[in-house]
Length: 74
Image (cartoon, rainbow, N blue to C red; front, top):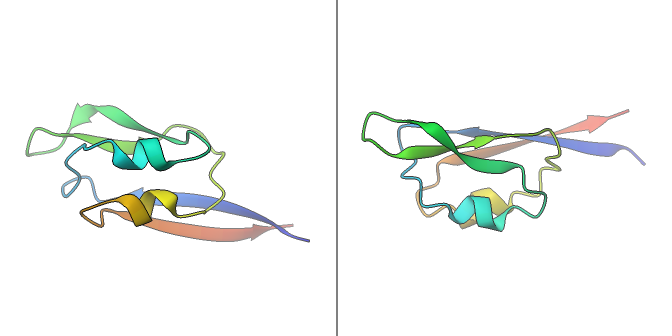
């Protein structure tokens, strides 16, 4: 059975740094950045490559800022 490798793309300008996606991630892949967007919010970013593509973060995001990608690994 093939393993699934996940990754996310965060729309940094829409993210308001509410931290809900960080709490929802079962693998602790996300954290708030030290950088801020043009509105002054700390946005979410990936901090490791343990993402499985479960999409918990995207489902919980109230502003639909997260896109999840899944890729089969051989």
